[in-house]
Amino acid sequence: MSSGSSLLPILIDPKNAMSSKQDQSTAQGRSINDNDPLECDDRQHAPTSDQDTSNIVDTLLRDRFSCRYFLPDKVPDAQTLNAIFECARHAPSGSNFQPWKIHVLRNDRKSQVAAQVQTAFDNDDPDAHKPPFTFYPDAKGLARPEYNHLLQRRKDFGASFYGPLRIDRHDAAARRAVTARNWTFFDAPVGLIVTTTDIAVAGSYLDVGFFVMSLLVSARAHGLEACAQESHAEFQDVYADELALGERGESVVCGVAVGYADLERVKDLGGRQERMGLEEMVVWHE
Ligand SMILES: Cc1cc2nc3c(=O)[nH]c(=O)nc-3n(C[C@H](O)[C@H](O)[C@H](O)COP(=O)(O)O)c2cc1C
Image (cartoon, rainbow, N blue to C red; front, side, top):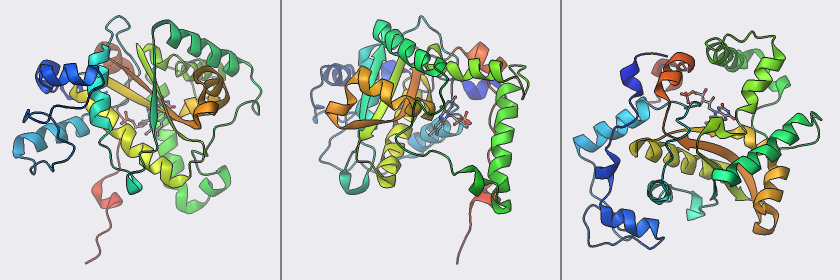
């Protein structure tokens, strides 16, 4: 992990991030009071950001990371979670479809559901569980020379992820145990299962991606850290049973682990992931 200072999770004091009146109103599921200038008014466009706001947003985005170590006993309260959901619901979507829902797993219920997923994982039949959508391009496509850079990135990710854990590339059992940490949401006190409609197509997943990113950024703004987890989608059938997804017409997109970061462990064990530079990423046409 790079410098510790870049991992500081509390960029905005949660006490100052929203007025207490807003906290109360969102916690009770009521709409936001539009007389308060700090609060969001659904019917008005907000003025363009000032420098302070862009600095805060830039910092939230640039310093973000996927957190996989959490303080188990420091539990985000419902008020803070609702404040995050309140921000995330403003994510854009094609035709304002908003094809997303969140299932919040906490306490005993989270443990019960995680145990069911672990049992399914232990079942070991590779065909027993199927995600409702395909996440990665198939191996044949990825093997084409023009996509070597994608395979290389996956390899680099594996090295920086398993390296600090001292797990060898060929140690399948140890890798499996690391994968299994997904099911408890890496011991985060809150596990979110984000769903979309069970008629979702590629565009729906794009919409939900915007929504999940909003969740991740808002979580940081409230002093929390998070990790998106596509791996939960493989256990669509388990979540369908546990969360009654069939009768709701929903299917799993991903999980999101949410909690207060255990920064000591993150620094020791969480490899900071490289990013391609702008020269590789941006193609200018003018
Ligand atoms: C859609 C999506 C799905 C992901 N699924 C998982 C997952 O199942 N398990 C996991 O440990 N990390 C998961 N991640 C985290 C990625 O590994 C991580 O974002 C990537 O390696 C870059 O690292 P960073 O987020 O720390 O910058 C996922 C991220 C995204 C955006």
